[in-house]
Image (cartoon, rainbow, N blue to C red; front, side, top):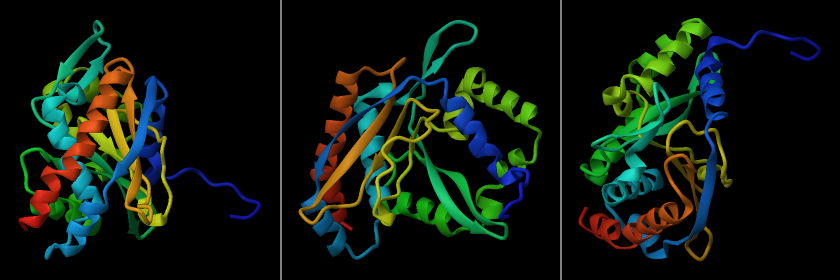
Length: 244
């Protein structure tokens, strides 16, 4: 590649779509330290391996029950309004190695508020280790379409087919690079909220960021939702880990 140029391949097309759509969303972050030493100890003691992503997804889903705004989405067509999904689906950014190299996919963690930690973990493992052609079949197909047709599909899913939006796109998202020792605090987000966290400090703390669409969420409500996730991770989810 040195001294040369090449066309951006189809494998980047969905990422380019997300970046294009995210530019229109007025997002803002709320952040705080999460005190999770007890949760870390319970996680280490658990017989079954449970990832941090699973624990945060579970807390995210449970918080969406008490804060239904996390399940809402702003719709601009034909008039400005808000649609609320009856359940939570978390869109998860997943890096996978394929024949052409490293590629970013978007998996789904469905109904984390209704499922056990083991069920969420199984779905996460499928996203991370399952056959790419099977797990991300729809994304691979969409990536092959011309840009104008993909953008029409995005518009239809986000503005018209609202009953299917949660299943196909999600109600919230997570993007995490803590396993690399870094925190991607602010990243392109096309949903009402997106959660990220950094690596755990020696004293058990983790810095957590919740990005929010200001058209749906205000700062005070977003702060209460983030505090609720913190409390859930320190109480109910610790108990769920101990019961495994």
